[in-house]
Length: 371
Length: 125
Image (tube, rainbow over all chains, first blue to last red; front, side, top):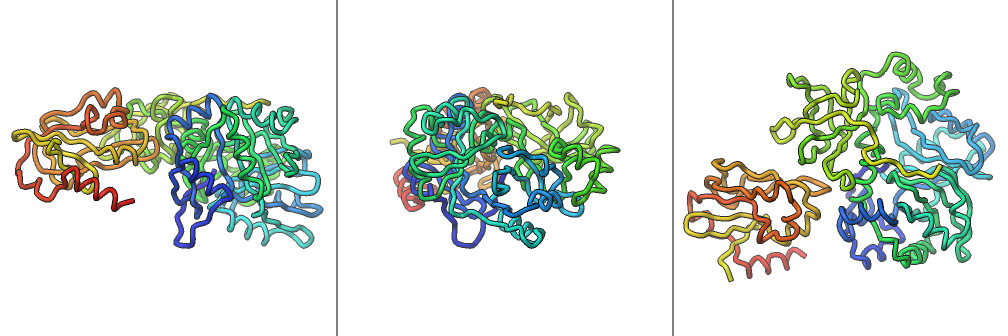
């Protein structure tokens, strides 16, 4: 979910930084953090995650608690999703919206017994915390959790690996979560992720993060995975990257994320930008986010213009690269709504060449969630 | 040792008679990671020293490859179309990019030999 932005400030490190280096990670600056882009190689890491289990350090992301009676109703004023109906242990994807109906960030929200737990993008977390703090009424606290790390274990073997260490995890279903004890450490584990595979995200006290990562890596089915494969996995899964596929200029309807807006909210339109979003729901948006499959072997990158056969500009590529599981290039972008039907033949302009591509159904690689 | 020369941008060039073979160094392929596509110049195309002659796509990003000398392209490595991973497996062998007829042998002046390139890489780390 997160966007990259290098800063001039001192680079931040997650609790796993030394471990990444010891494992041979190639480190790059990402959203202000020193993060591994790859270990064995993006292709091998991608394939390993789709066939066994990949361990990701996502501790750079923001974990934030909202505490206080009425936190659900207060949060609803910033997002277009149902919070009041969200049952304890359930997790939901949502979007912070601005008054124009643009997307300020995308996030995961879980209702726990005593709070709402939010996970937000690294590059947006300071702005998100300020946004929340300004919006929450007296009596509702915004509590960042820098004392906790976040690991993701993803892939068909992920839950079996984790359940062997933390019995009971296998009973979670997709988008549910719970509190678990591991060797005296309190973990918060959700069955969700950002790869399209089955798996979990594990919130762990930072002092125990390395020990937990090492315990997971001790299982032969688990390998460390860098940001490069995280990006190719999420792109094949058709998942948005904030700052690229969605930003303040894109609405949830344009982004094809209207499923994140439940019925009560869609009917009421009682969220920032509600007027625009209700209009787009009723009349259709002028453009849509779609999957795009280049016909050749050349990856088509973010920023390339999308053209019709007559050369008319009809959109832009927002994410593009090589899909190791697909075995070829894959992309996402925005096109005029009339051209958003799968199978529509279009072109992308890159390095002075016009490359044929087709609107494709997302995801490129099927989701393997355990519902 | 061959008389292979290297550029600071990590291309190599082998000259035999008036013809040269060009590729990227093993160090460069390792930095790029998995190569998934190589956009090679066409036979007959003129390339100019220091200008973009090819583009190499890894999973993560596209990178330009500059011509180490000026001249006309006489061959391209068609094997890279079907198997771009050859660049990772054999950057300084079967993973060559293109051949060219050199316009000026003096373009090679100032390029590094293998020993100087190794020292150059050492200084980069």
